[in-house]
Image 1 (spheres, one colour):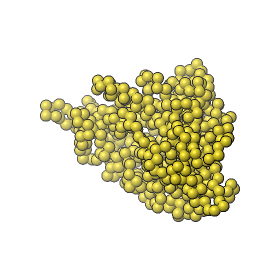
Image 2 (tube, one colour; image 1 turned 180 degrees about the vertical axis):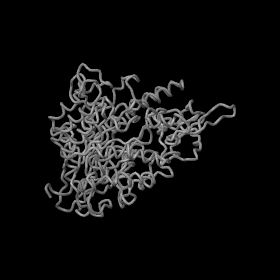
Image 3 (cartoon, rainbow, N blue to C red; image 1 turned 90 degrees about the vertical axis):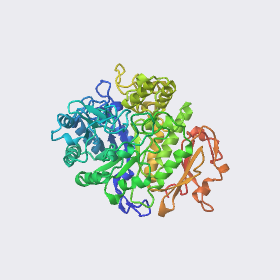
Image 4 (spheres, rainbow, N blue to C red; image 1 turned 30 degrees about the vertical axis):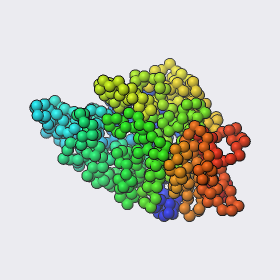
Length: 610
């Protein structure tokens, strides 16, 4: 993570590279990581106890999902006190210990910044809704009702919320509606109000930066600026009272002004504290570039979701009506964002899991057999580890954790979004829609990533005591299939061992895999994902070959040879530096251009130690 000199042909950065470009980030979902006190909930002392595990994995920065005081209706993304810690997770002293413990290990810590909205139990909102004349009334977005031709009261707009239903809730006390893009318990803050913005900066950011945190993952960062004329959204779903309306609040008229102000007033004065933004509904590079251009001085990097949202029916009405897609579509999204960097002063993230999506190996890999699970989990690791940008891992990804078993019923799904979409399907009375929604939840639901971490093969997988009822059910694979840390940590060829190897290779060949240019081969192929990484001035190249299928595939039949793709000169040989196959599986392989099911490998055009 030391600062290194970079040339201007390596994605536009001239001078010293900030640490976060080369760093490996690891997201911890506190409720599900490690329970230290036997109450069935993960906590901060539990995280502290496993920092050495993260350091040994190769993690440089821990991203801790919300641990603030909260009613927990949306698992902490509904904050009632930004300066207190939810009692199940620990205390302020525990957070101070976590900060110091990370720094003692030469690791950094970033927190989740959730300031598009608060909980409806936050003191600011309680004041705001107390009367129309309260000084904090304008800290949230209030509007009078409209009336239909029959005189019935209706919301100010027809906007649909992310959690189903309207974005407006009626407040009987003050006789107005308040806006909430998510749940009715998550009222949106009014960023148009400068006093509100300053309170956000002081009470939610400077407070934690003063305690030593190193920056923030900024939730819903492009939703602060709404259309202030509040028009109705176009009718996308006839007959539905609420319509998708992301264009009314995403990337709004003042959004770049607000983020630059945040950077200038808070992040820059604190030694350029790290900022990584969640940028949903922003699928075009031309839309993303202003947020991450170094010249614009807004955000260091962002999460863009085109690839990870594959298979969903959109963010709104049909989100969990699963839509199958070809591999070529996934590859096209990856290629778009890999080449997005070239010739710019921007930077990007690499990720395929987080707390809001199903597990990568269940979505992009193959869990039909133990062999295919292991191979595809490793292939996903190799794919992610060889892409340009800053790598983010999510807890359990490194051991190949999988989605809930399909046999589990809706009662095991705890997430408010899952429940909202399922209840909406039930209310429709359409049996086909109910079944398809449940099928979609089994693949895409946020719940899958929130199952307790699988540390060992005991009754509760080492997440909590064996006689404790965990807040979510532990996956059967922890003890039935040996899918846990304890089983894998002694096996260098396990999924966990392979992740360690990939991260080591990524660090050793950073000019190729973190900063290198991306050249896509066979973009239309529906079985193979093949690309070349190039290091610019050094003429070093790597060929990444990934079989995303359960059948053998042949490179040469597609007109590609390893040596040819690497541009090897006469007398030069390509060298295999990593493969997803176990050593015993590699015996007898004579043709490197014929790939076994879910096999991946990386070849380079330079000698070892060169």
